[in-house]
Length: 634
Image 1 (cartoon, helix red, strand yellow):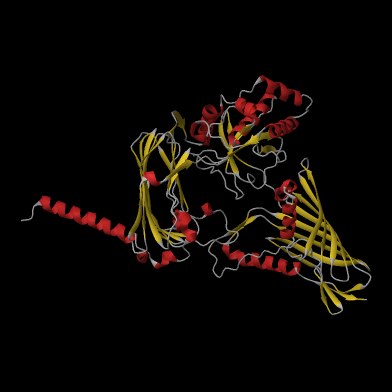
Image 2 (cartoon, rainbow, N blue to C red):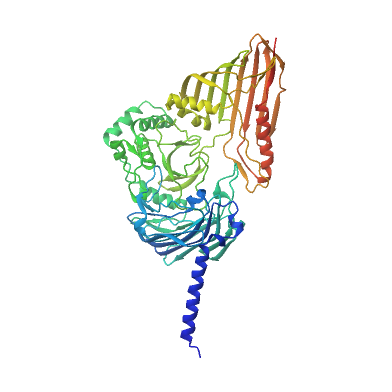
């Protein structure tokens, strides 16, 4: 009779062999399901993420990841790195490389990983160092197996879970699990799970399987708005020895104010005296804030500095005053301290700084954001001050911190507030030009470009560029004008009204094309909506116009006496939910044509079914923008 002990040993061996065979299959390229290769540069074969919360001040993180890289574009999905600092102990770190047949070709231990500083400028929180594997493949496809085990004393940050890791990456199987052995409460939030093959095994245990790669599509909204995403946080946490409470934004903001900001704001007496003197004649808080902002910009410069707990705590305001530099936290806190000295209330504010509009999640308090700005209460709401820029106008925050929910940190606690929205009618670019056409088709022109709102930041940097780079910019911007010569450029940067003006004298040979005794002239000389997004046979994603804008062109075209108008295009007016377009050209007198164009693109969120109509609208705009008039010799 077979003993029970023998059976147990037998089944254990079978079980181990089965697991090993499973892992070995995942190392072979040929075992990837065909559907997961479609649109994929990399396939996550398996990833198991596990957090074991031992106490409010200790947790163990393990990750075992197998990913097959299909081509060069997929190399970024290696993800063979681990951040750490003095409160983080890396217990295990290793990687193995396999060829397409699943044969091991390289093995790396922890000592083989490069160890470098991980401090990044302007970030709200950042570990001090990172160990990463620098591996250059010799052929594709190849597979990486990566394993890490890390012990954290600071528990303020739990890695979330994104089983879809970005465009052009599919997932065969991914697992996320939290085991809570402590008295601290774990809070999680799941988004967009219902549209994907994700199984909930228990309250803190999820498995995703066979998630196909998503192909990037023009005008698609932020990736996080439609892919599965899990956030996790502890209600009681430790940040380098300081205990924190996080049940909602109010008490989390209160902790930030009490533990991170308080005690950092004291200024030296010389700075106090100087800023009081400068604001002595100011008649409003806004005027005082403007003086303080200019003072800060002239006295400091931005530089990445990593001090304080977890990179969260700003350096002392007195040190910023002495050294003349700081990161986003330090410069924001320094400006706040100066404003406090002259009696103006302001608040340290956490934000996701990015050209893409990313909100702080008002429904889930946790460590979020990558940047800090300053908010100043105003009659119309808040003024938003970007303290890392030496050139930005006062209260201008377009294209990096505009139109998003942010965390305002007050002495009473945190609150979510929405930053300024720049409307389409504020975001204007106006092109004016006087154009002289010669019988040869050559043109000379005096061009004026006036930019406001979000468009201002697309232009004002030019005044600090080298002359050769300025000319290159205009040749690229006016790329439909062949043989363009830039003879002179002048700028006027009106920071008071936040208006940037460019004036150019230009010439272009044979801009208009000759056709026998006739000349074909494209009157829309210096601005065109050339870009038409791709056509998708079966679009998968909704689309978004994140910022509206208005482009206005007014050109006066002077004709030589030897040419007269034979045919002008009829006026065009188009209006729909996506925007408005108007195009007209009239003959002012025998030798003068007046060209007018206005294009407005409206901010909005739209369904994938509406994309065709949107693209058709842009196609019409592009068509009319390229239209020509006929001139003939008199």
